[in-house]
Image (cartoon, rainbow, N blue to C red; front, side, top):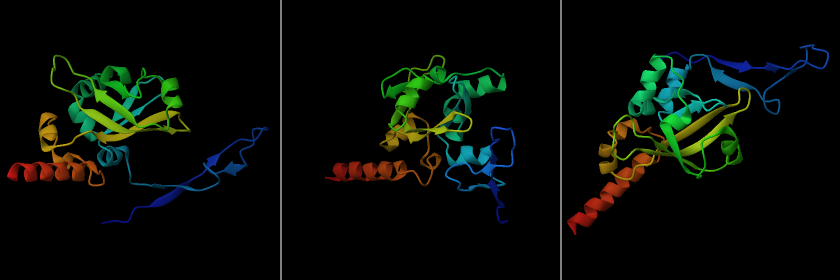
Length: 188
């Protein structure tokens, strides 16, 4: 296994005269570290239930887990059709319409997004619980969350495997703990 190369990104700001000699680092003059071999594909794997979208609420990227669930989105991307957040998701909490200014006001809240049914689906749709983070340089928004699942039956209903939930996500333990509790109740 090769070691990852680390580098520092310095953002240069032009002073009032247009001179770029004054360089400042991104936040509080602290260096930004990034691994040279960490492409977006890896990000999609690490955060399988994330959504990246812009100020116009156009979806730019979905994590690997959401790509499997939102097949309509994947087809639109291949056809180079723009997909809005409101086409794929419904905001359950906080109760508001999905628009940039509303999300800005609730930036510190927990968000619940429900995947909308795709063309003729009638089954209950997955709910995602997470947070939305603003990327200040490009003004893009990241929703980083996980499926709201409580039992193995929920996993089966949404066609998800326990291995589809990242190891760091506490949802895995909650599902197994709940399943153990259900088994203990059945034994009594």
